[in-house]
Image (cartoon, rainbow, N blue to C red; front, top):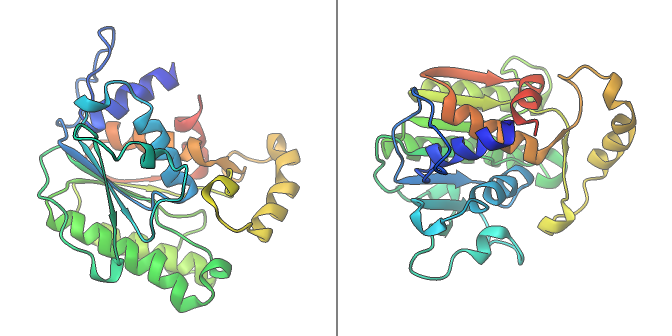
Length: 264
């Protein structure tokens, strides 16, 4: 049931035509003419692309704009949908430090930031902050200037601007900065340890992540839902569901809520 409902929500978010048997929620957002996604080459961003592009009648969907820091890797699902006049996908390879203006938004347009890295991958605290704070805020600010009212962002478990841990502090500062932009609806996801196939993204293995998953996966059923590892596609489904159904205000989804909303 939840998977069917999420498929309907995706159509609502991106103005897809529902199946004849579907009935849109009465309080759904206005129809969109375009959607925007930053970070399409990561685990959650790729999962969002898979879900959105798996829907039928692609030619009837509004444009999906993908804002990325590097070209899509071979085999990326969106790379198969960028050719032809009827395609709904446009890929923009940009420098987020000099991000161009987003197209003017319609009343129901939405944007999602799935940008993020780790200290180990970034190589330094400054490089990490350039992605997880500067790039996220640049994209959100551009979306706000374009008139987008509904925005979602992937943060992390433990995000807190007052944290003594650099990673959590930057994530928390980014959340505070997003809230200050004044979106009509803001959804913030705080997933726990992410699970997914990084090899398919042509990403280098994250040894710490692999070690943590090896330790926690066998114990997942005994861990609180708020601490269990979570699949990237579960986070993607939860984000889409929340962005399409939450009303005005700031909505922070902890790991347990992401598990609940994203369960198939």
